[in-house]
Amino acid sequence: MKKGIHPFYQTVEVIMTDGSTFQTRSCYKNEKMVLEIDSKSHPFFTGKQVLVDTAGRVDRFNKRFAKAQEMMSKKKETN
Image (cartoon, rainbow, N blue to C red; front, side):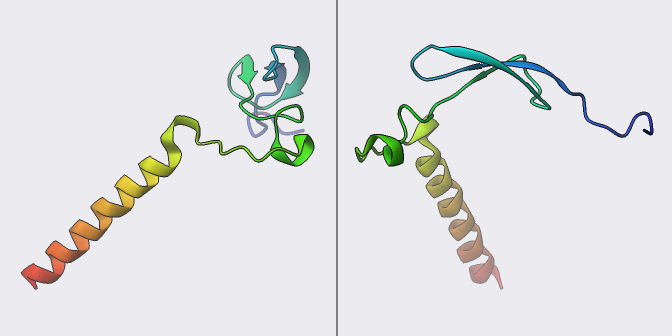
């Protein structure tokens, strides 16, 4: 194996939504990985429809899209 070309591979503690933990090996950069959705809370496995918007991702996208639209309209006005 060549040195310096492979990612750092370490033991990572995975914390599931119910608080249970297990360890695995991964290239994940942190020592702990906290899951927001797992097999115990995912709508496919539970049969319940749940809207999950973690950290306002939809809102962040809409804000970025609105800014891009503003810039495009200003650009058209100046031309």
